[in-house]
Figure 1 (cartoon, rainbow, N blue to C red):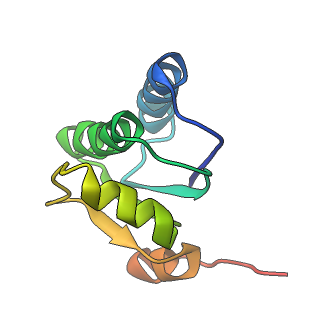
Figure 2: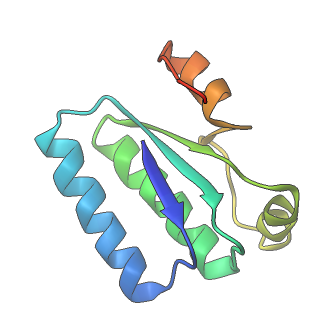
Figure 3: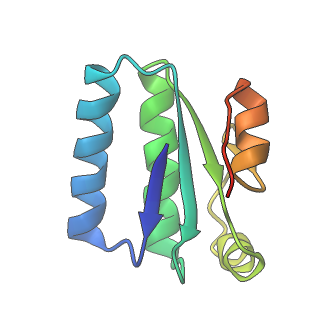
Length: 107
């Protein structure tokens, strides 16, 4: 799982992508859940970064799931007109875990 917090601006987005690629290879991942519940806003550029992460992972044979998109973030995403086809989106971490039969512990 990759939890994202705060804003996703260009320099940080590039660092996130590099880290995703390195760690996905190092850990031999078959899937990656990207949790954006810690972000306070998503502008068009940051939404495009998320989509590019998922597309890049798919090219490597890794399934990406976006989760934790709040209602106001969903509105921003729709208004951006960025296509989300072929990207798996789940409501929250437990729903994402069910997709892959993972255990999620909640306190």
